[in-house]
View 1 (cartoon, one colour):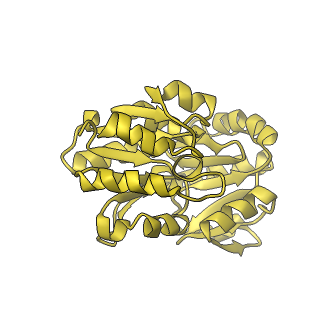
View 2 (view 1 turned 120 degrees about the vertical axis):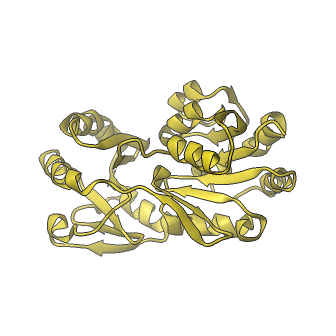
View 3 (view 1 turned 60 degrees about the vertical axis):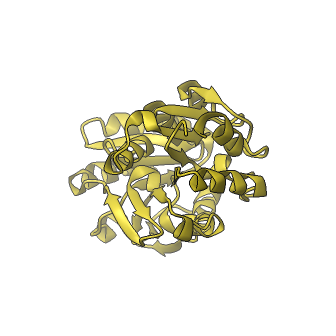
Length: 269
């Protein structure tokens, strides 16, 4: 086996554009696991949004791990336990709220996998909550309601709007212990500094006695860049965003053509 741990993004990577895992992709993943590989779903999704794919890939019985919230939470479905969790530092909340207000950004926080928001109501917000199966708690004041720990903050909006908002928000939060980045063109996220998919995967690998050289990842999006750069071998989908392709060591077929399976056969086994 060339790579003993394989991390795979979900949207645009594991699943096709209809959000389905191709049968041949399942077979290739199961063969990787059968040969002793450690399989990891690595996603920006909230925990409830991963359940369908945990079941389809039978990770509760076959084994494997999930990195959710763009690296903020790592858990083991087979053991039913959270292994590691990173939250946005509470001391950064005031700065985040002030920056969001100044830039008129519809901020979303996550409380026990519930989307808590005061202003978010665009089509991308409803896409996010629908895909992840999240309840919505619409509050009169997010500042007043924010008495809980959140793994990340999310801002949804038109790609052109967020492209302009991203550098402004990053500049406004330059002194705070957080990272600001777009996970998708329509999603702008705020996480604890250093909390990303790449860091979470390498931390998991180390806990399992594996080195960076043992790790491989497949991805397509902005939030996969750190993962593709930091693992031992990064593979970008044919449909990947340009920054993801630039960060990868190699490419594979698209998410509609079993690109994950192709990558497993060529680079993992």
